[in-house]
Figure 1 (cartoon, rainbow, N blue to C red):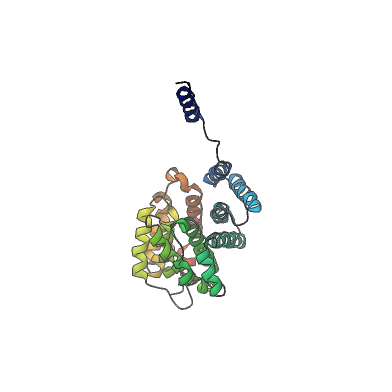
Figure 2 (cartoon, rainbow, N blue to C red):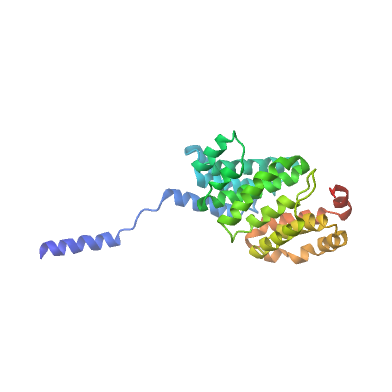
Length: 276
């Protein structure tokens, strides 16, 4: 009987014991909270610093690489000088690819292809790579957008990644958006399938209706590709009322940047830059 009571007492103590919190999880929660307030540059820089400390301690840490890819992509939106934004986007893209390289199948295929990101390496990516794939596609598209037709060579790997992302995470807006942008970004050889791009942008916007930059991309790239210049002018004027500040929520930084960009644009300047 005494042995039975002792055994029950030990079980009760075990049931009351609370596992110690995981220090990695606490650290990641801290940088995620700082990143959530990324419209505040100081908070965003704190998220970057925390992830860089982890990466210094553990090179190749996927959680830190993924956060840094997202954070530098966001920091580019704070930059007023295009060259600085381009630098941050390149850093975001680089961290994203480093994150994907933690997948041995992906990195091994790239090595076989002498550093080229082709369809075969991208096929090696799985569901666990979707978050890093999303940040890489987002940053890489914006990087090419700033570079213009000089970034033609990058559109092929972006297309492979966006297609794979749409397969791995069909409820994520970045996959169809990335596929659409690959068709719509201006290039020396002309644009891709504009009709299909419209379908893909519709899908992206349905998945993330509160993200204003998808709507702005529709105006800047789809409407201009279709030559609908009257529609561009009307849509630019209506843009700020379509995406009011009060509905920004978690997209506060991105929507603010999109509204600022829309205010700075003119139809005349867009027509002059068009590669029709």
